[in-house]
Image 1 (cartoon, rainbow, N blue to C red):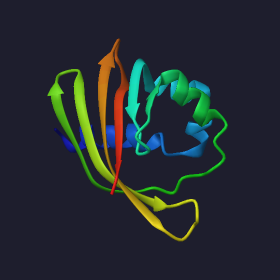
Image 2: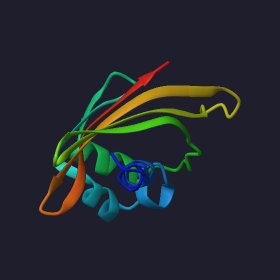
Image 3: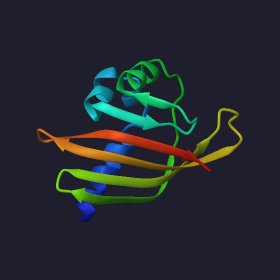
Image 4: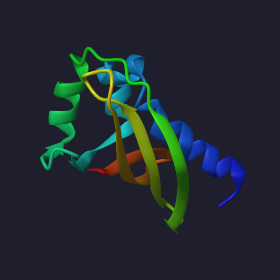
Length: 121
């Protein structure tokens, strides 16, 4: 994977960390596929509608530190993204780290996330 491709996936992935994107049903709808599924760090399973409904009213502005970012092409239209995310917990004192993975699929010239998992460390 080229540096340019890696940066493209870093941008796609981290755009979903930004409040202005997370709170925009239109932006999130464009970034996640209709068949999206997430295994959350809570252990819950979430689908696109759950995600759209949950993020639209979210009040927090995440400050996520991303490290160990990697993207691996699984097929010409499928990419696996993995990274470590660290952020302050809701108590604003404790740093919580999660290992994250996402699968992005290109359909009709547009990349969308079809799967995401966050595993709390």
